Length: 401
Image (cartoon, rainbow, N blue to C red; front, side):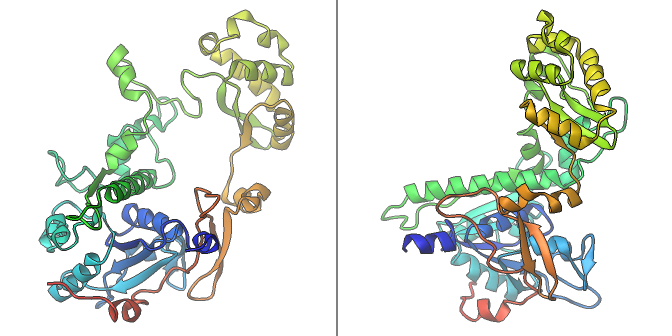
């Protein structure tokens, strides 16, 4: 493959992925792979009776002509094959697809795949190089493995939900399905590491290399991002408490009121703090020896926050940001969807892409992350209608017993 072809097809071109997941965690992982060139075949239940069939995400949140806009992002670059996994003939077809695949993605409760005859032991016997990503609430082992688990529950068990609140108020949801997304990204990392191992394990006995299971628990993906939460408890018995918009133990870093909204200001570096105090006309605080280090600022954070708030309150968000940007102090507005859509930096970085849906709607969707200099990702296919690719995919694929 020449360099130009590699750029246009993506670094995962040639990687074959079968997706059996639904809703968020598994499909987000497969979407990430497809953004970088992997061929993803998504298996969905067909319509039957009063059920419209398909991944339930097709019907979540705001719909256009019966299909959600979320679906247009989550399933771009994929092919849809409608098969009823409750039927053995359909499962045989799926086993044939998996026998040719590099990666299988699933996010059912542990035991479901085995009950369908789609457990890893059976699948890997026919395809020893198969990498199987399994995302579940609590993992494939342990005393909780059979419990149903959703991302919101994982956020609670992982320690995140306890912190997402104002002090003394009820913990709140982050606002997006962050538990599912974190698990998806951990799953993608696991797949890429397993692929590296497979490449390194090629031998006469294993011509494709050896596959393996990537076991991702939703709560563990959340817990992995909880920074010093556990070691602080282990060392000091300290249970981190909710702190609202502040960053506990690091000062100043908070949201501050303006005349027409709020700004986030992170003035917590020693030199940044001095520049911030100069910008707000409080050189007295910037020169205070007791505030030169973070520990001293944390001890007097209420005083510092009050001083910053006095300065921001009569000013507009734009006025505050202009002054702080000029002083090289990290600060930013709290963006809405409208702010994102109108921001020139998003567009300059290719983070807003225009697609046309199957029903002809021109739609802005998020661009691709991360940015690769030689083999960038791309949106090459719109999200499919249910079963759109049955003929194209199944006519050339085997059936496995």
